[in-house]
Image 1 (cartoon, rainbow, N blue to C red):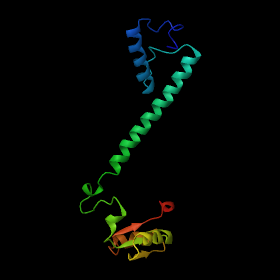
Image 2: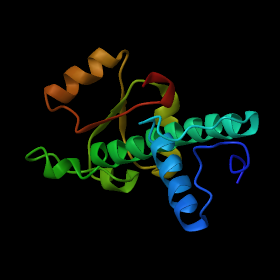
Image 3: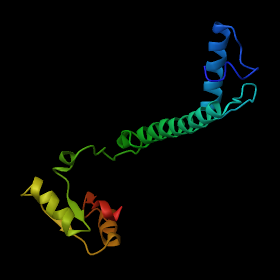
Image 4: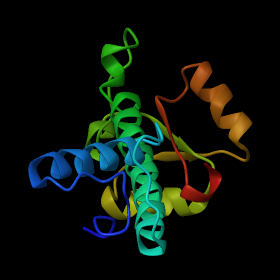
Amino acid sequence: IVERADNRNVLRDYGKGVFQGMWFGIVTATTVGYGDVVPVTRLGKVLGLWWIILGTLFAAMFSAAITSSLVTADVGSWVSGVPAVQTLTDLENARMGANFQAAVDSLHQKYPSKTVTLFKSPKASYEALRDELIDAIIEDGSSA
């Protein structure tokens, strides 16, 4: 619509012009940019630039969502003998350790009778996990 009057490369026929506009939108949003259809007006270039940015952001968010869902999928099905932990209730019967008092306090608010071992360092908690003294480590968000 913006380019129709000033751009000689834009088809004047409505049906073919709509297809050409869709082609431009897809090629631009995916950052392929063949160069067969380009805006010549200032407004067309600004809209094209925004479409490039939005297309890139959409592609990045889409690939991030797919990657995140693959990474956080049922880990238990990937690693033999390791159950998937989806919520804190999955750890009700687990022997737990923590590196921060805040993590222990938070867990005690939800499960007052739960015993959680507080370790002096992440290394000490990982060694206890390796040596099977505990089943899980609860970490504070700032330690990740």
